[in-house]
Length: 87
Image (cartoon, rainbow, N blue to C red; front, side, top):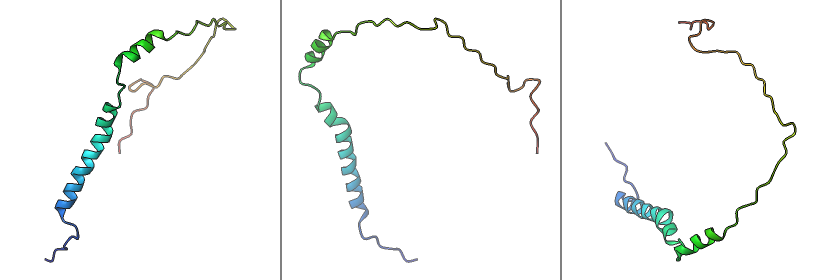
C-alpha cells in the first residue's frame, strides 16, 4: 500500500498547537489577571462614597390586579388521558 507523504511534518503541527494553546491561555487568563487595578483600596473607597438612589413612591391604579386563568389538566396517567398506541 502506498502512503501519501504529508508536506508538513507532524512535529511542526504539534509545536504550533502547543504555541497556540499557550497564547490562548495567556490572553484569556494571565493578561486579565495582570490588568487589575494597582490599588485595591480605591475600589473600597469608591464603594463607600456611592450614594444609594432615593426611594420613589409609586401609586398603582387600580390598587388590585385580578388574574383569571383556566387550563385543562392533562397529567400523564390521569383517567381521562388516552392510553398510548402500540405499533
